[in-house]
Image (cartoon, rainbow, N blue to C red; front, side, top):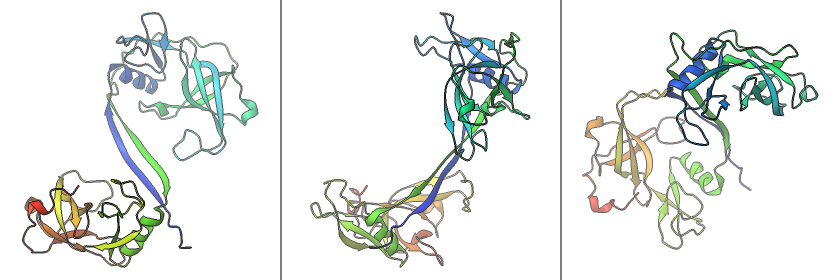
Length: 313
């Protein structure tokens, strides 16, 4: 049996978003060690606050401070914290209804073990030593057996309000390509491009999926395509990606390899970005030790006739 291929993959990007007046006040309040909720027309106080009532869809703007103490309404033990979670040791995820709030806030509870956590227990906020206007300004919750804490009556007016945040998004996973794509990857190590032909419609798919997306039948007949191909469509990239050593602007294109019925993605090099065009004939450029072409460059052939690639996706 051939070796099953697998590889760890990470998809990561910073997501930048602006804040409306309610979220701005909430996060600025956390920076100042103040927890704000928003009051609805029927007297409920929602924490964290939202800009529209989830029941009536009414716009909400009446901000009100709640206490940093509260009651655990439910919980789950996290025995193996992951990267980026609030604590680097086992802890409990808890929903806490802060005193004065009508809804519960999700965060971490620092506890010695699951036996130390129970629904109904009293807790309080442990503030982060350094705060910037983010949910992480609450380091976690901790057990509390003191008297209830009265809120200070803040209404959401702060100097130097937080108006935007950057949220890092990251997904770590292990990718296993399967039989068809494993063969495709193996061929790339030999600088060949191999796909599979559908036994019904006879289309050749590169990279192969193991089944025809049009007919829904399994594919097994291997077909080598290329190495040359035709640019079917393209875009000009003007924003430099983090950790990508390519100067902008550059062109990323769909390339239909000769003998294939599905265009693959590739960067176009060896030509100015403003000279790239649909129908341009290109060939792969490999670098030493690479598992796939570094980019595609013009072959010098005449452009392909539009009729020859207009139906290719």
